[in-house]
Image 1: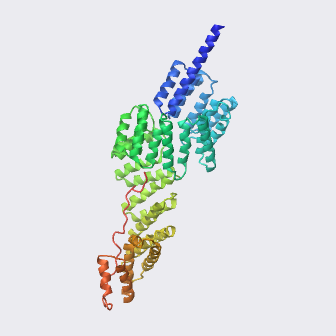
Image 2 (image 1 turned 90 degrees about the vertical axis):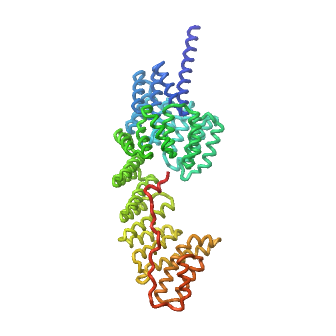
Image 3 (image 1 turned 120 degrees about the horizontal axis):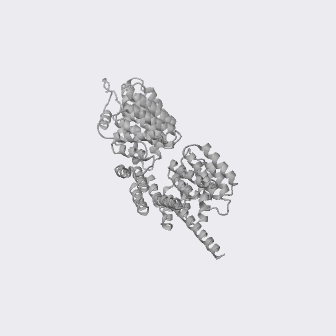
Length: 576
């Protein structure tokens, strides 16, 4: 009887040690110490190759993106014990990783049916599998159905609530926002507010909204750092937040803190290299990536090498690595095609660059930022002086633009109009684009000057001919008069418009002079003097004011204002 009791205690102790080891491996993963996690799970399999141990080693590989290794471990787990259902969930996750959502769902549904929704771990890991990978290899709605069942279990952990919060977030439906927040709050309560992971998830939710308040999020991140200093990922998250705010020195400083607290593994150095690239430290990123070559097996390694090489002016080498990316069969992103476009631009093959930028746009046209790929084409065509094509492409940007950025919208109308004007064949089209721009952005009165300049470009003798510019100059003066009337600091406000108002006065002065209406011409000459213009124009106005009568000789015709041609640079307007 004593032997039985001793044996029972040894078994219990062994089980507790095993559970602690699995838990330790999972904690290492939460802390982003992946080499340590892998070591724990490998040691468990080596010391005791059970179905459960094989599952968690496969789980590690799945979460770090190695589908083939994950599948191998799950299959070994099923060979060890066909009744241990988690390995079937693991194989379903592999199918999700490979894009087979239907196959994954068939397995998961069957396992849940077989276990009658009574196995909490099956529900937890099945729900997690549905949200662990990038779209389209995820299904948050299926995850919600499963995880709602998981949290009904008495032994539900904070992870179940965190995963459920993630699933509601990933639906991208505003009505699910409160549900996501509620589940993150449950996870925080479940951990007695000691879980840095749960607290961080709750704050991160705010990043999914439009125009997030980075200042508030940063303040709350730093509070987590203060109360949970051992939660290593918080330092990385602060660094990434600074990076989004383009405060790159602070971003690097906090990532260095993250590195100092994390394991010095190849995987961590690899992630650091990617972060360096994203914070524009292209030379340092390339150094780190070269040091990691052959040491990390991520399929995306060649992509980051290509990007870093291109940014460091090594286009031939970049092209070689992008060739490996294309041959690998991994999912392509718009940034891959943009890298190919950059290589083509370097090789002065603009047609190929344009084709790749269009592929980048078409890969995800619903992404607001995707419009910058078409804008790059328009800018480059403009720089090539292919003005008619540029005008049409700027129009395409206007049509497809989903960004709510006023300045970006104004620019596209301006450049489209100038492109058509500079083509010297499409003056009416130029006028149409400037008119449309003014209709959409009436506060940008400069469009009226552009319309006038366009007519002067069309006909340098406009004053003596149809005077098509006159109505636009008059409209500009009327609109800016209103703005000056409202302004508290009239001199400061006038400084914004003085040059263009002087051009309008000069035109009107010349127009009435040509019509032999000296009093009216002097009226506009006096305005040039009153608004404190200087130089040749002021002298011209002063000379006219001294005249007693209009001479018989016609004055010189007005010419378009100089330096009216904008000069965009290829890619210059794309945000970081």
